[in-house]
Amino acid sequence: MFTLEQLEGFVAVADELHFGRAAARLSMTQPPLSRRIKLLEDEVGVRLLDRSHRSVKLTPAGRLFLADARQLLRQSHEAALSARRALSGESGVVAVGFTATTAYSFLERVLVALGRERPQIELVLREMVTAAQLETLMSGALDIGMIRPPAGGADLADVPLYQEPLLAALPAGHRFADRDRPPAIGEFHGEPLVMYSPSEARYFHDVLVSAFRSAGAAPRYVQYLSQVHSILALVKAGLGVALVPAAAASLHYEGVCLRGISGMEPYPVELHLSWHRANDNPALAAVRSVIRREAARVAVAGT
Image (cartoon, rainbow, N blue to C red):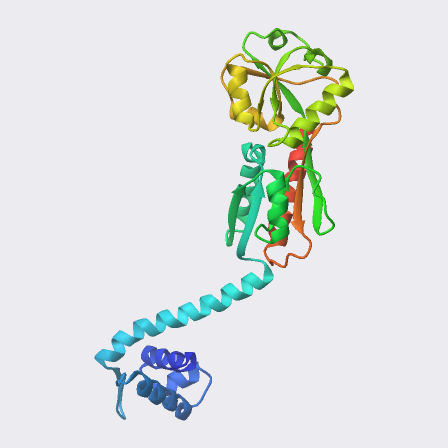
């Protein structure tokens, strides 16, 4: 099989149509260059150059082979560059997990920033609940996850990203919707409330149970669902009220009024970043850095 050095020699001679100039271009002497071309022709099985004392010309076969030779050299250079970029973390593939509510606003910020700053890193996005993300992080099939705390397990790093408030989602005409002051958490006592599933949305379920218990409130749970957009649809239909993360405001549900809730400081909803401590993906650090920086900007904007 011919070598890249032989291809480089042939392309140089084809460009210069002169062995002496081609040899100088390659920083070598003419005799070894001539041997390279002879070995290449023997390997290919056809004459690529017509040589004379006065001139060098490409044969018809040489003209066809020249295009392929240039392409092979270009591909070899690109492959070497890709390998160096992958080693340095400038390129590569990173599998990113996220929860559904993260996709409402924060994920978009991350994708825009990574697309602008790290376009050569390919992201594989996977929407998963926190429990599934943690399991997949442990197996190595996921590089990094945007999760609800806690991560759990010494093998997983766990870094807080930001906190956000809960908002009251109210159907049109509800008594809390139009009054001057926001509702307090204790005022949801006895209210029909669309609640999060204790199994499929455990984090939000536990946050709300804890908040109501602390306020001495006992809402009347009318349905249990796992996705915020489905909860808002039931609120719009008048089945009850709900408490949703502030990111849900980006969904713009017509017929649903979102209001702040007094007496719920600090913000109760947390988003964390998690990854396996032994993950050796070179591109992971770059993705992690962008996610944490965008989270810091969200936190500043929310203060």
